[in-house]
Amino acid sequence: MDLSQKLLLKHDKESKSILRLRDWDPDTDFGKSKKDVETELPCILKHLSELQYRLFAENSRSLLIILQGMDTSGKDGTVRNVVGALNPQSCYVKSFKVPSEEEHSHDYLWRVHKSIPPKGHIAIFNRSHYEDVIGVRVDGFISKSDIILRYRQINDFERYLFENQVTILKFFLHISRDEQKKRLQDRLKDSTKHWKISESDFVNHRNWDRYMEAYEDALRLCNTEWAPWYIIPANAKHFRNLAVSQIVANKLENMKPEFPGPKLDIPNFVFD
Image (cartoon, rainbow, N blue to C red; front, side):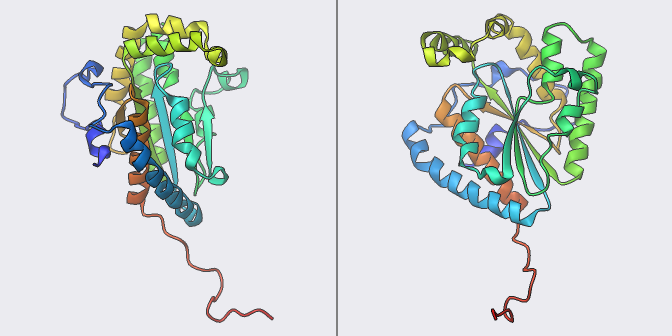
């Protein structure tokens, strides 16, 4: 089953429809059970590792994976279960939290551009430049005109990256409000997860509808041919891991990375 097309947010320049996340079922798993994933995922991850090696050897293009979603949507879990199979020699994870004083002294994309993967590498953004629109919008720190301006700038920025050999995959990990509540309650019960809890988690949960509106605009306004969004049903963690890993593997396959030719005359090379 090719999940790439099923979960891809279709790009339609002529469409005037408004995206509603409530139309996307976060419980969908396309009939994939945990047992199915236990069988299929290791094969996909092995293939993904092989494709990563070819990309690194080719050293001419890079891959940027963006993970967005509400608190507890599974960004860290996706990193552990999918990205954990990749070689850290040419793969890294970057988290974007509250900007530092230095980052605040630059434009909002400055810290993002510094973290773009070099040729041959894969980077995973745990949150991203979209935080500089979504979070500040919900908190009321940005005007409507500036929201539109930033989304246009983000589209231009992502197109610039695409035209400079950076392939972009954007995943929105879609969970339900009830599932988020359950996961937050589970963290309260588990002392090993208390360190992950902050007051903002519960404030954001109360602002769920405002966040959904903000994400709907981000998905609609920044869904482009060069950097499309995938909406990943993430209530079922096993399906989330399968979907993301398969889409990443498919993208790398389509990129067709090739081993470069030898740097010396192999047939005629002999040791003294």
